[in-house]
Image: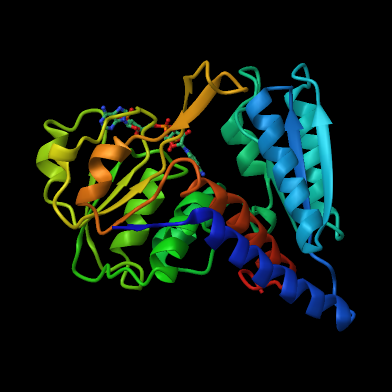
Amino acid sequence: MTLLDGKKTSETIQQEIADEVADIKANGGKVPHLAAILVGNDGGSVTYVNNKVLACERIGFGSTLIRYEDTVTEEELLAKIKELNEDVLVDGFIVQLPLPKHIDTEKVLESIDPKKDVDGFHPTNVGRMVAGLPSYLPATPAGILQLLTRYEIETHGKHCVVVGRSNIVGSPMSILMAKEAYPGNATVTLCHRNTVNLGYFTRQADIIITAVGKPGLITPDMVKEGAVVIDVGTTRVPDATRKAGYRLRGDVDFDAVAPKCSFITPVPGGVGPLTIAMLMKNTLRAAKREVYG
Ligand code: NAP
């Protein structure tokens, strides 16, 4: 069994990006710049955005953090997005989700210029991904593709079972794994809450990618010997022995499942760390005008 080390892979990718930024600077090119809009003070969102800004500093990008109280109006937010769409300094920007209930998330995401939509959530980028055109891929599925590539995991002709169909992970993952590409060329089954007998499907899988958020959902009896298991699930469970009072658990019963696997991601330290690296990669691609010319 090989552990898929997302932390190390993320560091490698970020170093590759930092090297490229150093070259851009040395040649007098434009330094990539990422802006982030954060609404409210939710602990998780504040940490995620701060980590993104820190990553920018580490690899030599410029960054701007724009913060609003959760009382911000939709109009104010849309006005700021319009400003960022037009700002030539900013190559790409993100609006950290979730947004407060009084704000229409779809409207906000659709107001972002697809050329600057480095989260890859705009319908234009989603559509381009489905059509096989150059696009910004959402960070988590893109990170999983990187793990598969860098660990040289065979996907051609394999049966990949994706569990969870969210717009940001499960659905795009299922589309990407079915593409005529590497990683890809897999036969894909997409499971969700209404799937009857989940284990019937996962037991047939050469590759399981689970993005649900239910600790212990995937038990050893649901996994074929030699399977590749990628666990996106990240749930805080109370743990009095930890300073934070909680620890992170994936969807997979790791200790029991790992001995059956050829490859498996730990939680934490698997898919999670790759998300930031892939956001940085999308920002670099935006600065280089690689996707839209
Ligand atoms: P989500 O929007 O929370 O949706 C969960 C999905 O799981 C839904 O499609 C749901 O089906 C499905 N589901 C729920 N119970 C199920 C069951 N018993 N059997 C099969 N499917 C079931 O999904 P998400 O935003 O992708 O998040 C999923 C997990 O990944 C969370 O733990 C989240 O924290 C984590 N996550 C981690 C990263 C990262 O590490 N970088 C990034 C994103 C998300 P229905 O559609 O039928 O409701």
